[in-house]
Amino acid sequence: SKATFYYTANDRVDFRQLIKDFAKQFSTRIEMKQVGFRQEASRLGGIGSCGRELCCSTWLTDFRSVNTSAARYQQLSLNPQKLAGQCGKLKCCLNYELDTYLDALKELPDMDTKLYTEKGDAFCQKIDIFKGLMWFAYTDNMAHWHVLKAEQVKEIMAVNKKKERASSLEDFAVEIIAPEVEKTFQNAMGQDSLTRFDQPKRKKKPNKKRKPTNDRNAPKK
Image (cartoon, rainbow, N blue to C red; front, side):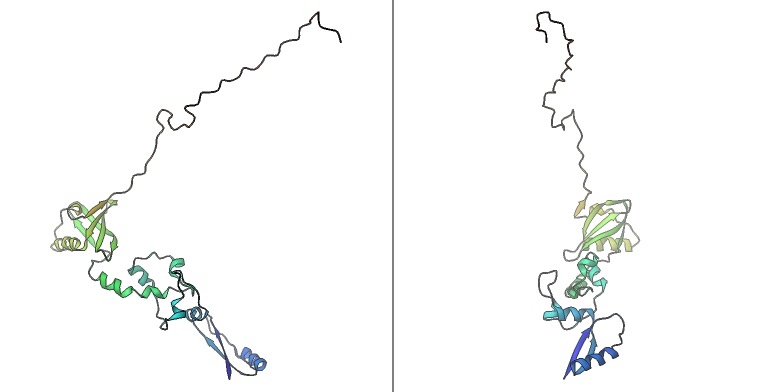
């Protein structure tokens, strides 16, 4: 019989003396196995951010490496607190739908696509992969975004390939998104005052103390 101890460490650890002490204490053969942080999480178990049990502790047996490029392809925010699992590494579920996103991206122009129009040059700001929409903005007006379909972007790219400029993004745009104007409120004739209907209180005049007068009829003390 033997007793196996699993441990995690960044570097190699010398357990020769510890193994001798354990073997003497437990009277059995001791084996120390170093495992990764993912394997540790699979043995400990737990509940993921999705509310279900960890995949690595229920059914997942093939621990493939997960890169940040998987999050970029899926247009996820690169927030370590949201992308990291219980093991402290990137979540394994980032690889589940990666192939679907990669296949959909093949039908879309690249994110760094630049369009040349008579109104100016435009850069891509955002992509909706499954709807096939792309958001572009002129270099001199980055606040206004123009929503174009992937087919329309390819049409403009075909025109640019002939070393010609397209008319404008407005001729191809499905929707134009303007920045929201911040609403400001001004005071008009004191209407923002909650006490404008209250009658002002009159200030009381200070009472002047009268000088005591000698009353002849007053009784003497």
